Length: 387
Image 1 (spheres, helix red, strand yellow):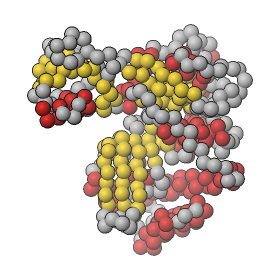
Image 2: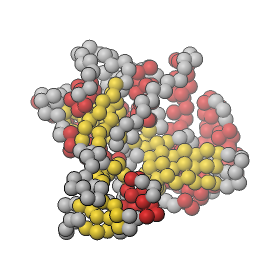
Image 3: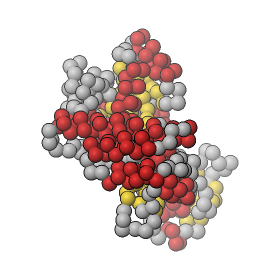
Protein backbone atom coordinates (compact mmCIF):
# COMPACT_ATOMS: atom_id res chain seq x y z
CA UNK A 1 0.00 0.00 0.00
CA UNK A 2 1.58 3.35 -1.00
CA UNK A 3 1.47 5.54 2.09
CA UNK A 4 3.60 8.49 0.98
CA UNK A 5 3.02 9.17 -2.69
CA UNK A 6 4.46 12.56 -3.66
CA UNK A 7 1.85 15.27 -4.39
CA UNK A 8 2.95 15.39 -8.04
CA UNK A 9 2.31 11.64 -8.35
CA UNK A 10 -1.18 12.01 -6.85
CA UNK A 11 -1.93 14.71 -9.43
CA UNK A 12 -0.84 12.42 -12.28
CA UNK A 13 -2.90 9.54 -10.89
CA UNK A 14 -5.96 11.81 -10.78
CA UNK A 15 -5.28 12.78 -14.40
CA UNK A 16 -5.10 9.07 -15.28
CA UNK A 17 -8.49 8.38 -13.70
CA UNK A 18 -10.00 11.27 -15.65
CA UNK A 19 -8.48 10.22 -18.99
CA UNK A 20 -11.04 9.11 -21.59
CA UNK A 21 -9.03 7.16 -24.18
CA UNK A 22 -6.62 4.22 -23.76
CA UNK A 23 -3.86 6.26 -25.42
CA UNK A 24 -4.31 9.10 -22.93
CA UNK A 25 -4.47 6.65 -20.01
CA UNK A 26 -1.16 5.08 -21.10
CA UNK A 27 0.48 8.52 -21.26
CA UNK A 28 -0.73 9.51 -17.78
CA UNK A 29 0.21 6.14 -16.25
CA UNK A 30 3.75 6.46 -17.61
CA UNK A 31 4.01 9.93 -16.07
CA UNK A 32 2.61 8.59 -12.78
CA UNK A 33 5.10 5.70 -12.84
CA UNK A 34 8.03 8.09 -13.34
CA UNK A 35 7.03 10.08 -10.25
CA UNK A 36 6.51 7.31 -7.68
CA UNK A 37 9.47 6.42 -5.43
CA UNK A 38 11.03 3.06 -6.30
CA UNK A 39 11.54 0.86 -3.24
CA UNK A 40 10.28 -2.40 -1.72
CA UNK A 41 7.10 -0.75 -0.46
CA UNK A 42 6.04 0.23 -3.98
CA UNK A 43 6.93 -3.02 -5.79
CA UNK A 44 3.29 -4.13 -6.03
CA UNK A 45 2.23 -0.70 -7.25
CA UNK A 46 4.93 -0.78 -9.93
CA UNK A 47 3.73 -4.23 -11.03
CA UNK A 48 0.10 -3.05 -11.23
CA UNK A 49 1.08 -0.05 -13.35
CA UNK A 50 3.17 -2.10 -15.79
CA UNK A 51 0.38 -4.66 -16.12
CA UNK A 52 -2.25 -1.98 -16.67
CA UNK A 53 -0.14 -0.28 -19.34
CA UNK A 54 0.22 -3.64 -21.12
CA UNK A 55 -3.57 -4.18 -20.92
CA UNK A 56 -4.24 -0.72 -22.35
CA UNK A 57 -1.80 -1.32 -25.20
CA UNK A 58 -3.66 -4.53 -26.06
CA UNK A 59 -6.92 -2.59 -25.95
CA UNK A 60 -5.51 -0.06 -28.41
CA UNK A 61 -4.40 -2.88 -30.71
CA UNK A 62 -7.81 -4.59 -30.49
CA UNK A 63 -9.57 -1.39 -31.50
CA UNK A 64 -7.27 -1.04 -34.49
CA UNK A 65 -8.06 -4.56 -35.68
CA UNK A 66 -11.79 -4.29 -35.01
CA UNK A 67 -12.12 -1.14 -37.17
CA UNK A 68 -15.32 -0.04 -35.55
CA UNK A 69 -16.90 -3.47 -35.21
CA UNK A 70 -19.69 -3.65 -32.64
CA UNK A 71 -18.84 -4.73 -29.10
CA UNK A 72 -19.42 -8.40 -28.46
CA UNK A 73 -21.67 -9.42 -25.58
CA UNK A 74 -22.72 -13.08 -25.98
CA UNK A 75 -24.04 -13.55 -22.47
CA UNK A 76 -26.09 -16.68 -21.86
CA UNK A 77 -28.63 -16.48 -19.06
CA UNK A 78 -27.51 -18.41 -16.00
CA UNK A 79 -29.50 -21.47 -15.01
CA UNK A 80 -29.21 -24.05 -12.25
CA UNK A 81 -26.80 -23.86 -9.33
CA UNK A 82 -23.83 -22.54 -11.32
CA UNK A 83 -22.61 -21.65 -14.79
CA UNK A 84 -19.25 -23.06 -15.90
CA UNK A 85 -17.64 -22.06 -19.21
CA UNK A 86 -15.45 -24.55 -21.10
CA UNK A 87 -12.37 -22.74 -22.47
CA UNK A 88 -9.68 -24.22 -24.68
CA UNK A 89 -7.87 -24.18 -27.98
CA UNK A 90 -9.41 -25.71 -31.08
CA UNK A 91 -9.70 -29.52 -31.04
CA UNK A 92 -8.97 -29.62 -27.30
CA UNK A 93 -12.12 -31.68 -26.70
CA UNK A 94 -14.60 -29.06 -25.47
CA UNK A 95 -17.47 -30.47 -27.54
CA UNK A 96 -16.78 -34.00 -26.32
CA UNK A 97 -16.74 -32.81 -22.70
CA UNK A 98 -20.04 -30.96 -23.13
CA UNK A 99 -21.71 -33.94 -24.81
CA UNK A 100 -20.58 -36.52 -22.23
CA UNK A 101 -21.40 -34.38 -19.19
CA UNK A 102 -24.73 -32.95 -20.37
CA UNK A 103 -25.93 -35.11 -23.29
CA UNK A 104 -26.14 -31.91 -25.35
CA UNK A 105 -26.46 -32.43 -29.10
CA UNK A 106 -23.24 -30.85 -30.30
CA UNK A 107 -21.23 -31.38 -33.44
CA UNK A 108 -17.93 -33.19 -32.81
CA UNK A 109 -15.38 -32.98 -35.60
CA UNK A 110 -11.62 -33.53 -36.01
CA UNK A 111 -11.53 -30.35 -38.08
CA UNK A 112 -10.52 -27.11 -36.35
CA UNK A 113 -12.96 -24.29 -35.51
CA UNK A 114 -16.08 -26.46 -35.68
CA UNK A 115 -17.58 -24.49 -32.76
CA UNK A 116 -18.27 -20.89 -33.83
CA UNK A 117 -21.08 -20.08 -31.38
CA UNK A 118 -21.57 -20.89 -27.68
CA UNK A 119 -23.47 -24.09 -26.83
CA UNK A 120 -25.01 -24.92 -23.46
CA UNK A 121 -25.97 -28.07 -21.62
CA UNK A 122 -27.08 -29.13 -18.13
CA UNK A 123 -25.22 -31.69 -16.01
CA UNK A 124 -27.77 -33.19 -13.62
CA UNK A 125 -26.65 -33.82 -10.06
CA UNK A 126 -28.61 -34.51 -6.88
CA UNK A 127 -31.12 -31.75 -6.28
CA UNK A 128 -30.03 -29.39 -9.07
CA UNK A 129 -27.87 -29.07 -12.18
CA UNK A 130 -24.69 -27.35 -13.36
CA UNK A 131 -24.95 -25.32 -16.57
CA UNK A 132 -21.96 -25.83 -18.88
CA UNK A 133 -21.23 -23.44 -21.75
CA UNK A 134 -18.91 -24.48 -24.56
CA UNK A 135 -17.13 -21.39 -25.86
CA UNK A 136 -15.67 -20.91 -29.33
CA UNK A 137 -11.96 -21.82 -29.43
CA UNK A 138 -9.20 -19.53 -28.24
CA UNK A 139 -6.84 -18.69 -31.09
CA UNK A 140 -3.27 -18.45 -29.74
CA UNK A 141 -1.92 -16.73 -32.85
CA UNK A 142 -4.53 -13.96 -32.71
CA UNK A 143 -6.12 -13.09 -29.37
CA UNK A 144 -8.01 -10.21 -30.98
CA UNK A 145 -9.97 -12.66 -33.16
CA UNK A 146 -13.74 -12.84 -32.78
CA UNK A 147 -13.84 -16.40 -31.29
CA UNK A 148 -11.37 -15.40 -28.56
CA UNK A 149 -13.32 -12.24 -27.72
CA UNK A 150 -16.54 -14.25 -27.42
CA UNK A 151 -14.79 -16.81 -25.20
CA UNK A 152 -13.45 -14.08 -22.89
CA UNK A 153 -16.88 -12.47 -22.62
CA UNK A 154 -18.36 -15.83 -21.63
CA UNK A 155 -15.59 -16.33 -19.06
CA UNK A 156 -16.35 -12.98 -17.45
CA UNK A 157 -20.03 -13.84 -17.15
CA UNK A 158 -19.59 -17.40 -15.83
CA UNK A 159 -19.33 -18.44 -12.19
CA UNK A 160 -16.32 -20.67 -12.85
CA UNK A 161 -13.98 -21.59 -15.69
CA UNK A 162 -13.06 -25.10 -16.83
CA UNK A 163 -9.92 -25.23 -18.95
CA UNK A 164 -10.07 -28.06 -21.48
CA UNK A 165 -6.63 -29.10 -22.73
CA UNK A 166 -5.49 -31.96 -24.96
CA UNK A 167 -3.30 -34.26 -22.87
CA UNK A 168 -1.29 -35.23 -25.96
CA UNK A 169 -0.55 -31.66 -27.13
CA UNK A 170 1.66 -29.78 -24.64
CA UNK A 171 -1.05 -29.56 -21.94
CA UNK A 172 1.08 -27.67 -19.38
CA UNK A 173 1.93 -25.00 -21.94
CA UNK A 174 -1.76 -24.81 -22.94
CA UNK A 175 -2.87 -24.21 -19.34
CA UNK A 176 -0.16 -21.59 -18.80
CA UNK A 177 -1.07 -19.80 -22.03
CA UNK A 178 -4.80 -19.66 -21.28
CA UNK A 179 -4.25 -18.43 -17.71
CA UNK A 180 -1.91 -15.70 -19.00
CA UNK A 181 -4.56 -14.64 -21.52
CA UNK A 182 -7.27 -14.48 -18.86
CA UNK A 183 -5.15 -12.49 -16.43
CA UNK A 184 -4.08 -10.09 -19.18
CA UNK A 185 -7.77 -9.41 -19.75
CA UNK A 186 -8.59 -8.65 -16.11
CA UNK A 187 -9.65 -12.13 -14.97
CA UNK A 188 -7.65 -13.34 -11.99
CA UNK A 189 -7.50 -17.11 -11.62
CA UNK A 190 -7.77 -19.12 -8.43
CA UNK A 191 -9.48 -18.99 -5.07
CA UNK A 192 -13.12 -18.16 -4.65
CA UNK A 193 -15.14 -16.16 -7.14
CA UNK A 194 -15.10 -12.41 -6.59
CA UNK A 195 -15.23 -9.02 -8.26
CA UNK A 196 -14.22 -5.49 -7.27
CA UNK A 197 -15.59 -2.41 -9.01
CA UNK A 198 -14.57 1.14 -8.04
CA UNK A 199 -16.61 4.05 -9.40
CA UNK A 200 -15.42 7.56 -8.64
CA UNK A 201 -18.28 9.99 -8.10
CA UNK A 202 -18.39 13.71 -7.34
CA UNK A 203 -22.01 13.32 -6.28
CA UNK A 204 -21.04 11.83 -2.92
CA UNK A 205 -18.93 13.21 -0.09
CA UNK A 206 -17.07 10.07 1.01
CA UNK A 207 -16.12 6.50 0.13
CA UNK A 208 -19.18 4.22 0.11
CA UNK A 209 -18.54 0.47 0.27
CA UNK A 210 -21.21 -1.98 -0.90
CA UNK A 211 -20.16 -5.28 0.68
CA UNK A 212 -21.97 -8.13 -1.11
CA UNK A 213 -19.14 -10.51 -0.27
CA UNK A 214 -16.04 -10.47 1.90
CA UNK A 215 -12.41 -9.34 1.90
CA UNK A 216 -10.17 -12.13 3.17
CA UNK A 217 -7.35 -9.99 4.51
CA UNK A 218 -8.87 -6.59 5.21
CA UNK A 219 -11.71 -4.50 6.58
CA UNK A 220 -13.80 -1.64 5.26
CA UNK A 221 -11.43 0.70 7.10
CA UNK A 222 -8.50 -0.86 5.23
CA UNK A 223 -10.27 -0.31 1.91
CA UNK A 224 -10.92 3.35 2.71
CA UNK A 225 -7.31 3.85 3.78
CA UNK A 226 -6.06 2.23 0.57
CA UNK A 227 -8.20 4.44 -1.67
CA UNK A 228 -7.27 7.57 0.28
CA UNK A 229 -3.58 6.70 -0.14
CA UNK A 230 -4.18 7.14 -3.88
CA UNK A 231 -5.97 10.42 -3.28
CA UNK A 232 -9.42 8.91 -3.85
CA UNK A 233 -11.93 10.36 -1.39
CA UNK A 234 -15.22 10.13 -3.32
CA UNK A 235 -16.04 6.68 -4.70
CA UNK A 236 -18.44 3.76 -4.60
CA UNK A 237 -16.72 0.41 -4.05
CA UNK A 238 -18.69 -2.73 -4.94
CA UNK A 239 -17.37 -6.00 -3.46
CA UNK A 240 -18.92 -9.21 -4.79
CA UNK A 241 -17.88 -12.70 -3.71
CA UNK A 242 -14.52 -13.33 -2.06
CA UNK A 243 -11.62 -10.96 -2.79
CA UNK A 244 -8.30 -9.83 -1.30
CA UNK A 245 -6.85 -6.38 -0.64
CA UNK A 246 -4.59 -6.96 -3.63
CA UNK A 247 -7.72 -7.36 -5.78
CA UNK A 248 -9.00 -4.04 -4.42
CA UNK A 249 -5.70 -2.34 -5.23
CA UNK A 250 -5.68 -3.77 -8.76
CA UNK A 251 -9.26 -2.54 -9.25
CA UNK A 252 -8.05 1.04 -8.70
CA UNK A 253 -6.38 0.72 -12.09
CA UNK A 254 -9.30 -1.05 -13.75
CA UNK A 255 -12.09 -3.51 -12.95
CA UNK A 256 -10.81 -6.87 -11.73
CA UNK A 257 -12.62 -10.13 -11.13
CA UNK A 258 -11.52 -13.43 -9.65
CA UNK A 259 -12.77 -16.75 -11.06
CA UNK A 260 -12.39 -20.27 -9.65
CA UNK A 261 -10.83 -22.68 -12.12
CA UNK A 262 -10.73 -26.40 -12.81
CA UNK A 263 -8.79 -28.24 -15.49
CA UNK A 264 -10.05 -31.10 -17.67
CA UNK A 265 -7.26 -32.98 -19.45
CA UNK A 266 -8.66 -34.91 -22.43
CA UNK A 267 -7.50 -38.03 -24.29
CA UNK A 268 -6.33 -39.70 -21.08
CA UNK A 269 -7.36 -43.06 -22.53
CA UNK A 270 -4.08 -42.77 -24.47
CA UNK A 271 -0.73 -43.32 -22.76
CA UNK A 272 0.56 -39.94 -23.92
CA UNK A 273 -2.63 -38.26 -22.74
CA UNK A 274 -2.38 -39.79 -19.25
CA UNK A 275 1.25 -38.70 -19.05
CA UNK A 276 0.11 -35.19 -19.96
CA UNK A 277 -2.53 -35.29 -17.23
CA UNK A 278 0.08 -36.27 -14.63
CA UNK A 279 2.35 -33.40 -15.74
CA UNK A 280 -0.50 -30.90 -15.41
CA UNK A 281 -1.43 -32.25 -11.98
CA UNK A 282 2.20 -31.97 -10.84
CA UNK A 283 2.69 -28.48 -12.29
CA UNK A 284 -0.54 -27.04 -10.85
CA UNK A 285 -0.94 -28.82 -7.47
CA UNK A 286 -3.21 -26.08 -6.10
CA UNK A 287 -5.80 -26.58 -8.86
CA UNK A 288 -8.45 -29.25 -9.38
CA UNK A 289 -7.31 -31.37 -12.33
CA UNK A 290 -9.39 -34.19 -13.83
CA UNK A 291 -8.56 -36.85 -16.43
CA UNK A 292 -11.19 -37.03 -19.15
CA UNK A 293 -11.91 -39.52 -21.92
CA UNK A 294 -15.10 -40.88 -23.52
CA UNK A 295 -14.38 -44.30 -22.03
CA UNK A 296 -13.79 -42.93 -18.53
CA UNK A 297 -15.36 -39.50 -17.90
CA UNK A 298 -15.43 -38.02 -14.37
CA UNK A 299 -18.29 -39.08 -12.11
CA UNK A 300 -20.94 -36.37 -12.50
CA UNK A 301 -21.94 -36.32 -8.84
CA UNK A 302 -18.34 -35.99 -7.69
CA UNK A 303 -17.54 -33.34 -10.29
CA UNK A 304 -20.71 -31.42 -9.46
CA UNK A 305 -19.97 -31.52 -5.73
CA UNK A 306 -16.43 -30.28 -6.38
CA UNK A 307 -17.73 -27.37 -8.46
CA UNK A 308 -20.24 -26.37 -5.79
CA UNK A 309 -17.52 -26.56 -3.14
CA UNK A 310 -15.21 -24.47 -5.32
CA UNK A 311 -17.93 -21.83 -5.61
CA UNK A 312 -18.89 -21.88 -1.94
CA UNK A 313 -22.38 -23.25 -2.65
CA UNK A 314 -24.39 -25.84 -0.71
CA UNK A 315 -27.58 -27.80 -1.40
CA UNK A 316 -30.21 -27.99 1.33
CA UNK A 317 -33.33 -30.14 0.96
CA UNK A 318 -36.60 -28.98 2.51
CA UNK A 319 -39.12 -31.36 4.09
CA UNK A 320 -42.62 -30.05 4.80
CA UNK A 321 -43.98 -31.06 8.21
CA UNK A 322 -45.82 -34.37 8.05
CA UNK A 323 -44.14 -35.55 4.86
CA UNK A 324 -41.76 -38.52 5.01
CA UNK A 325 -39.43 -37.55 2.18
CA UNK A 326 -37.82 -34.17 1.38
CA UNK A 327 -38.35 -32.31 -1.86
CA UNK A 328 -36.18 -33.54 -4.73
CA UNK A 329 -35.22 -30.01 -5.74
CA UNK A 330 -32.62 -28.47 -3.45
CA UNK A 331 -32.36 -24.95 -2.10
CA UNK A 332 -29.11 -23.39 -3.31
CA UNK A 333 -27.40 -21.39 -0.57
CA UNK A 334 -24.00 -19.85 0.09
CA UNK A 335 -21.59 -21.77 2.30
CA UNK A 336 -22.03 -20.59 5.89
CA UNK A 337 -25.78 -20.03 5.52
CA UNK A 338 -27.89 -20.60 8.62
CA UNK A 339 -31.32 -22.07 9.24
CA UNK A 340 -32.93 -18.63 9.17
CA UNK A 341 -31.31 -17.92 5.78
CA UNK A 342 -32.95 -21.07 4.42
CA UNK A 343 -36.26 -20.21 6.08
CA UNK A 344 -36.30 -16.78 4.46
CA UNK A 345 -35.59 -18.26 1.06
CA UNK A 346 -38.48 -20.73 1.44
CA UNK A 347 -40.89 -17.93 2.36
CA UNK A 348 -40.29 -14.45 3.73
CA UNK A 349 -43.04 -14.92 6.33
CA UNK A 350 -40.84 -17.50 8.10
CA UNK A 351 -38.42 -14.72 9.04
CA UNK A 352 -40.98 -13.44 11.56
CA UNK A 353 -42.88 -16.59 12.47
CA UNK A 354 -39.87 -18.97 12.82
CA UNK A 355 -39.88 -21.09 16.02
CA UNK A 356 -37.33 -23.85 15.43
CA UNK A 357 -36.17 -26.33 12.80
CA UNK A 358 -35.41 -30.03 12.54
CA UNK A 359 -32.27 -31.15 10.72
CA UNK A 360 -31.48 -34.59 9.27
CA UNK A 361 -27.80 -35.19 8.47
CA UNK A 362 -25.23 -37.98 8.72
CA UNK A 363 -22.82 -35.54 10.37
CA UNK A 364 -25.07 -35.12 13.42
CA UNK A 365 -24.95 -37.42 16.47
CA UNK A 366 -28.64 -38.13 15.89
CA UNK A 367 -31.38 -37.15 13.42
CA UNK A 368 -33.59 -35.27 13.45
CA UNK A 369 -31.96 -32.68 15.68
CA UNK A 370 -33.92 -29.67 16.88
CA UNK A 371 -31.95 -26.48 16.19
CA UNK A 372 -32.35 -22.71 16.35
CA UNK A 373 -32.17 -20.06 13.66
CA UNK A 374 -28.38 -19.61 13.88
CA UNK A 375 -27.52 -23.25 13.19
CA UNK A 376 -25.05 -23.40 10.25
CA UNK A 377 -26.14 -25.67 7.41
CA UNK A 378 -23.96 -27.92 5.27
CA UNK A 379 -24.31 -29.50 1.85
CA UNK A 380 -26.91 -32.27 1.81
CA UNK A 381 -28.73 -31.29 5.00
CA UNK A 382 -32.49 -31.89 5.17
CA UNK A 383 -34.45 -29.17 6.96
CA UNK A 384 -37.99 -28.92 8.32
CA UNK A 385 -39.10 -25.46 9.43
CA UNK A 386 -41.55 -25.06 12.29
CA UNK A 387 -43.31 -21.70 12.52
